Length: 84
Image 1 (cartoon, rainbow, N blue to C red):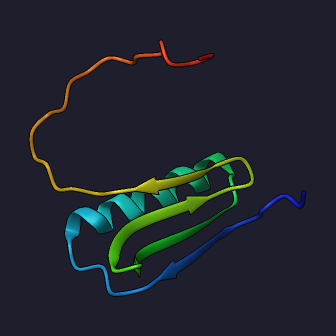
Image 2: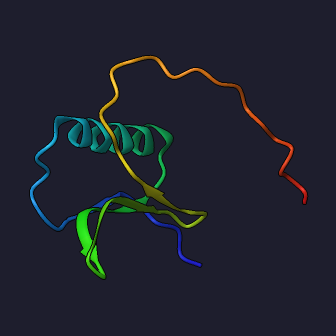
């Protein structure tokens, strides 16, 4: 498989919400900092459903749904599902 270089960005519709723009900036920054090539598809429709982001690298594909939430989210990792 050919290694990806750079970040390709595809935007379906204009990104109107600041929270989604913040997520996009964080995705690009994180991928760039890690030196990870990726294709990011943002704010598009599939089968009548709006998708915020799909991030595809050579190693993985993520579907990201961005929401505005101004309070702290607390939790801890749960790794019990690994290996099952």
